[in-house]
Length: 182
Image (cartoon, rainbow, N blue to C red; front, side):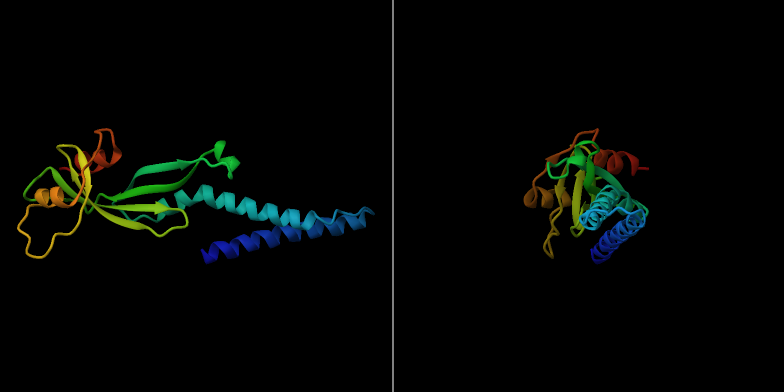
């Protein structure tokens, strides 16, 4: 966040410097540039850089994902205070799954433990363990069992979590249940 702020200020000063050059060149030609030219160019620099960062944030984050962690869902955003997002929607949130480290349960081959990572612009990444039931298909939050618990994974999840249905076309289901199976 600090580096983005510094880069934003650098873009503002760069564009303001360009406006100063235009102002001085206009004096040489015998005309005067308007006084509001420097702040206008600084504002253009700030907005242009921020819009560029918002559109490139998703690709920057995806390029930093380790091998085996794959994007399973994206959320496009259109908002009234970003009118350019109606022309081209922005991806400001996405979910990635750690497919490489997904584990099949010994007591039930249809149950997979997978870690989901929730990414959102200007927020910390959230890590959420999930249980995927490939037979149902459904998913549920995985809450660690208490020490000494004798419940199976399925029994534990039934008691502590709510199952959410998945469709067979859902990319999380496809990546965990079909692509990761040998």
